Length: 466
Ligand SMILES: [Zn+2]
Image (cartoon, rainbow, N blue to C red; front, side, top):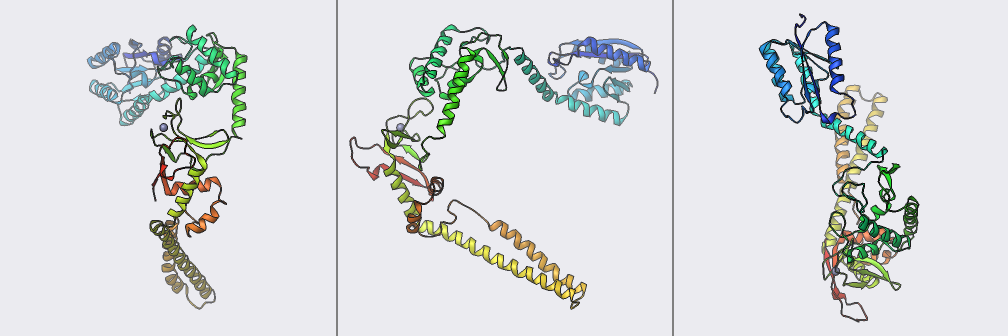
């Protein structure tokens, strides 16, 4: 291959190459060195500034180089990396076609040699272009690196909404919001629940920076954040003192975290989940009812306010509803529909045991065959002829067995509801809940008569799924 007389050097810097230190100067130096090492004469240098080859924006110097190549002024190209030249496979095809027409076969990059004059080289270039077009992936790595750097310098990160208590620049304190936040923290440290503080904020007409009402998750996240204590966190860990002022002190934040820790520990001793949790709906607003203890009585209630959004105007004492629903579920297990479902299961069981018998018989026959062969009662050929169909049958039976195995919450409940009624109280809460869920879709609780002494069963409207 003859030495080019007038090579083109192409360099490009783009705004997205942060952190790589690949300034144009550096690219040009490396390219010039490459030319010198190969004894190539450089005809001209073409430099596009701050234009990404990915976005497909016009690159005037790149275009000028293409013109020069087409006109025959340049007969070789040097770039730092193929992704400087183009990041779009389409553009590469245009580039290589132009090179082919102009008889330019030598394209070198500092990172890899490309000879567009043969198929291998073009293939290589295509691969490199394809890789470069995935640059967005690498770009995200760069962004992550950048995010970490920002964090370590104590600088704020971007984000859709500004943080509560700070202005859009994420550095300047919004005094009005900061005062609200200090009061909220004070209430929390004094033992008030996040939920109650949310109610207070919403009643006061204070909005989140997203312009909505407060929820405990939002408020708790702010309470726990290092940001309001002037600490910069990265991926949940404090990595530096922030360059913005804190609204509360780091010591206060430690107190807050301590409170959350204590809550987490005491919550493990919280009253156990109720058996109908998630299965009851408010007859007034349709919202799910939640379990709650009021004056020593377990109840299911419709909760208004943050996190729940119900009407808050319906409540029912827990044990009579639970008793009623459980009895209904057990009776349901006695209905013909349930019997059918259970017969279906019994049929599966019968099929399984017949498959197991077949398998057992085939296996013992195999055993018998090998013993006959060992005793020389049959020849190897006879043994093989007898064995093959049995082996095929065993494989097929094993497959069918695997398909026949099934499981459901009602496994082991084959029997009558009456028997279950006796066993019911022995079952643990999770098991009871699983059985109820298998039978009951949900139940709507209708409003009761004010002051009624006993529970009216007509208030309960179950929707069965089985
Ligand atoms: Zn309601």
